[in-house]
Image (cartoon, rainbow, N blue to C red; front, side, top):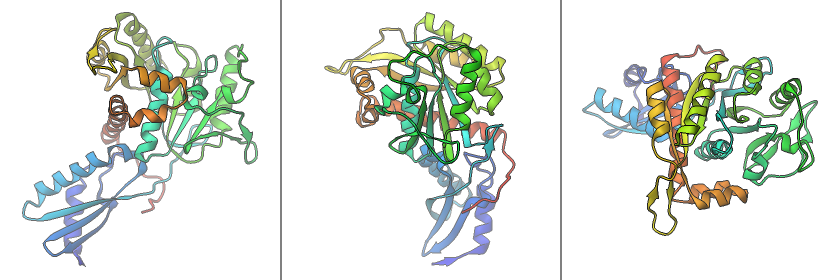
Length: 358
């Protein structure tokens, strides 16, 4: 096996056209090695855990480009881990690459289920993810994850988050006694959200998923003042009355300058557990049609499924991914989100600020 420096430069030039999913910059500096082994050229390319959910799609894209550029050669592409530390965000210094707010125009549409499922899917793919329950009046994350108890003091003034299979969790449910109602006005809400973001020991994250309160309250405004949100994802159900509220949520985020980067349709259809037939109880496709009309990426559907609901009630959301009926829907949403973020990064490449560690 020999390294061919001339071929290395040719490959770097060819793959410089492909944007890194995280930064949007060309891949030339992420080509770790180009080695000839007999009739095969072996290439190692670095990819950060930020893009773990679309690792296979990224590899296929690289292979396709190489085939186009070097039609007489056979390539074996290997994707290796590539470390790029996150930059501190906003006034709170959160070390995170993307902050995603999961929101809904009204309650009862499955927003928290979508937020928890997306978090688990990203973690399973290999990304570093945290989950913040910002729904102060109706925290659902402790129930959905099955993680109970009270948060403990961490290093210095930091709060140690709860651990959910390697996912740091924070919720008002971990700060007050079970069953106690939160009766707060706006300034107290702002203070609580600030504490959750600034004083929680989140570590270094690829993603922080924030489960927002339903409706168009002032939590979104508080978050927009604390740190630059990457964007919001709106969850709604297919029927017209839910879409009306989803439109209001989209308008609210746009007013506070938070991009709407996706829409998820929950309860899109009922999948019968006995015959596997699909029934459109609440209608179908309304959210997708609205997303297309308004230029919002449609991230996917979550079916209305008895087992999915039961696992949420039992705090066993992780088990949904072993269910061949609902698991693929949840994984596709995570892939769609990361694909959308990669497309946005390609359209607006970032300027490197720290040395890259390979």
